[in-house]
Amino acid sequence: MNFNLYLDDRTANELDQTARTLGETRSGLIRKALREWLDKKTRGSPGWPSLILEWSGDPQTPPFESYRGEWPPPREDPFS
Image 1 (cartoon, helix red, strand yellow):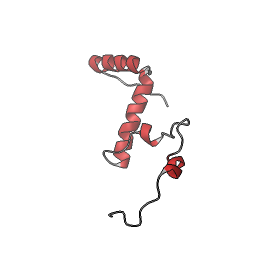
Image 2 (cartoon, helix red, strand yellow):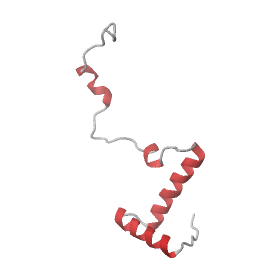
Image 3 (cartoon, rainbow, N blue to C red):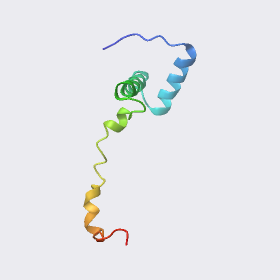
Image 4 (tube, rainbow, N blue to C red):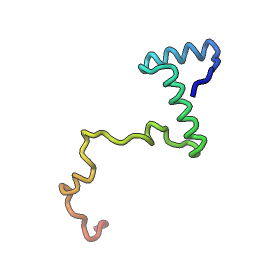
């Protein structure tokens, strides 16, 4: 969906500068900001940013569970 958005000069300049710094397009940056705002409003504040919710992990990092064999077994009484 396309639509027009009118910004004041200060906001437009800051958007352009931030987009260049992050290597994003203005549209991409606005889309991400809007998605995060909507996530907070629909899922309750503070809510998790969509970047966190959509993260599927680093494929080069072994699963946490793969280290379980290296741990000592639990004690019968953990408070002893």
